[in-house]
Image (tube, rainbow, N blue to C red; front, side, top):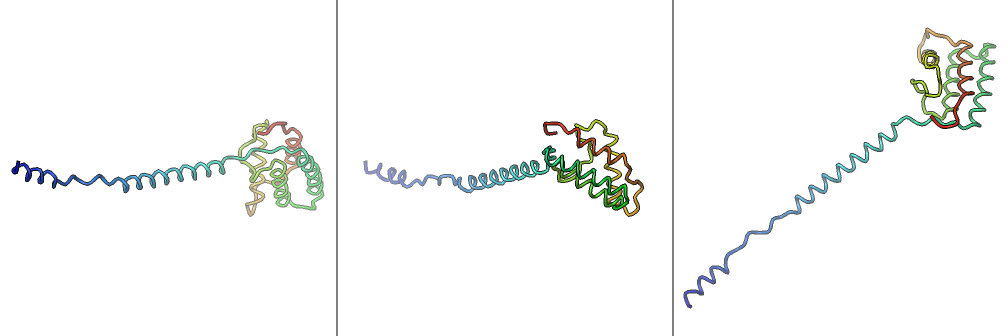
Length: 157
C-alpha cells in the first residue's frame, strides 16, 4: 500500500488543461454582428429617404395654384415678366401644388400626355439653367399646366 501512495500523488499532481477562453471570440462576434446591424439599418434609412415622394393633392393648395397660374399667364402675356422668370415661377408653382421637393423628369402617371410633359420639363430646364436657351415659353405650356391642375385625381400618385 505504501507503493500506491506515490502513484496517487502523481495522479493528484496532473494538471488539467485550461478551459478554452471564449470571451475574445464572443466579443469579436458581437461587435461584427452589431456593425452589420448598424450598416443594414443605415442603408435602409437612406433608401427610405431617397425613395421618390408621393404627390400630394391638397385641394386648397391646388386651387391657389390655379389662381396663380392665371395671374402668371396674364403677367407673361403682357411682358411684365420674361421667359426665365416665368419658368422659375412655373416650376415653383407645380412643386408647391404637388408637394414635391423637385420637379420630376418622368411624367406622373395621372398625366396622359408624356410627350407634353417631356417638352415642358425640357423647356423649363433650358430657360432656367442655360445662358442662351434654345426654347421659349409658349401659350400652350401655360394651358398644359392649367389642365394638369384641373385633372388631378382624388388619390395620391
